[in-house]
Amino acid sequence: MKTPKRKVDLVVISDVHLGTYGCHSKELLQYLKSIKPKKVILNGDIIDIWQFKKRYWPKSHMQVVKHLAGWIANGTKVYYITGNHDEMLRKFVGFKLGSFRIVNKVVLQLRGERAWFFHGDVFDVTMQHSKWLAKLGAVGYDTLIIINRFVNFVSERMGKGRISLSKKVKNGVKSAVKFINDFEQTAADIAIDNGYDYVVCGHIHQPVIRKVSNRSGETLYLNSGDWIENLTALEYHKGQWRIYRYHEDDTLNKDKQIDATPDEVEKNTSELFESLLEEFKLMAP
Image 1 (tube, rainbow, N blue to C red):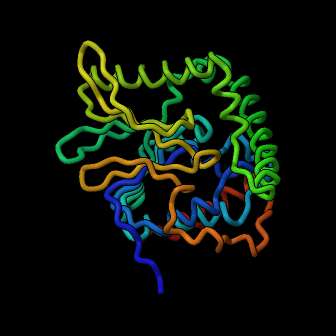
Image 2 (image 1 turned 135 degrees about the horizontal axis):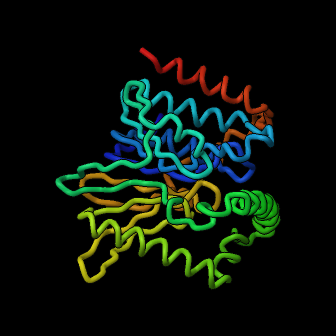
Image 3 (image 1 turned 30 degrees about the horizontal axis):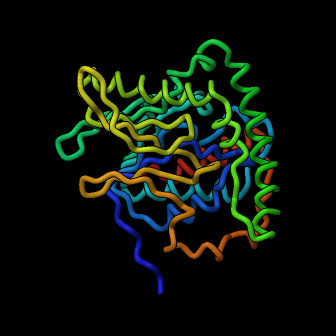
């Protein structure tokens, strides 16, 4: 007997990084199949265009794209907000196809309150002035994630819990902690100045919901986290926000993963875009 899909008014997903070794596409697919959202915000870095040159595009990554395409075909409103790793899509901002939109930011009315959604890389000084350094950091981060997966495999076989090497690095570097705090405060300050009740970001892979105030007022700052380390999303339903955490979801049959089929499929950039194009053609009326 199938478990009924959980209804959600709005789901926000960011920093999936499809096309990289660190992406937990299978877990994400399980989550997507478990919900029935009215609206979806894909808040940047869904596809990691920076790293297409690796020729890495597993079947499970395409299955995520197909599932999202299925939502769009069924009329679910999906906003794709561009991020830094999929910045190439900024050339297509304004594109509309049925219920699908490519945008740089979105402002929605949620029960009379205004919510401002954007990825957040606009606040990243490294991105603005030294893109080559940011890309180099992305490669190093991806390598660290691969090492981390091996460490967790051994740790879990030994009966110990999972650990995050990248989180330990971030939490141990004062400049990284300061950057996160400054990022959150800057986003909140701008939201307060513009009268937004909520500001919703991605980019820094730090899932959180917290009130931020300054002399001019307060706002609720939210970040959807990522599907590399945290495996989190934001859900808004019946006027309430919450952070969805895959590792805390006991409703999913996590033992029934889709590992039985070969997943390692390589494509070059043109082949990948042709595959994606075919999926989006299927959505057209």
